[in-house]
Amino acid sequence: MKLSVVMPVFNERTTIEQIIERVLGSEHACELIIVDDASTDGTRQCLERAAQQHDNVTVRFHEQNQGKGAALRTGIALATGDVVIIQDADLEYDPDEYGRLVRPIANGQADVVFGSRFAGGQSHRVLYFWHSLGNRFLTLLSNMFTNLNLSDMETCYKVFRRDVLERITIEENRFGFEPEITAKVARLGCRIYEVGISYYGRTYEDGKKIKWTDGVRAIWCILKYGLRRGAPTGRVQMPVDAGMRE
Image 1 (tube, one colour):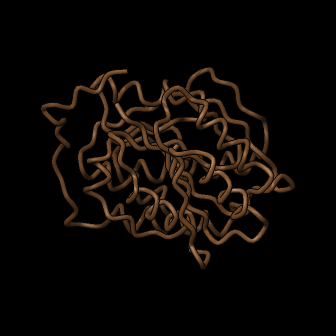
Image 2: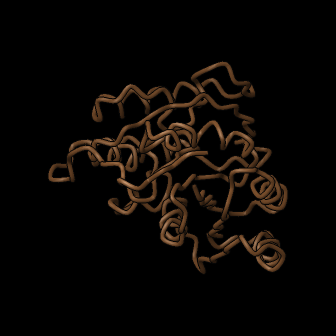
């Protein structure tokens, strides 16, 4: 099973080299696709070096900042693996957990896997109360429209069979990607699993970028995509020759 890791990046010069090495050091990662969303802090130069040093690293550059969703749209289109995982560049999420995340897909049980920061007994840094409350509220609201029982809709770690992503058009350019993709995989009838993950959250002083306005946009996206009619329905079928095993 070939795993493609898609990493959107914006102004992550202090962490980008470390996260690249950690992704490539995972026994499960086969290709790393990085999309730089018009960084201005020297990240671009780091990525140019990485692309020269590693054959399995592909880098694309946006000339204008468009947002996380736009970067993912670019990166996912380049993925060649059987399975695609989303990876942030800020060290909050641990690539050593790829094996746990892809296992339900590899075993033929799932089409999509969410890595939950709030499920299971994995460690996580204690940080902002209002962020946690906001995440849980957005997840609850999303669940009301998708009829799912997720515990962490806003998680970065989302894993997809590539043929599932091929049936979805990503419309959101920024952080609205999270509720959009959740609503669309639910409407497709995908088999969705959650896996508990660790979380090493960072502060705004460390470079955290999400703002309260992104939460407002997320609410709008939950309503927009949750109420949309005419989207594809019916359960995604496993390919006859999938043979996905670790």
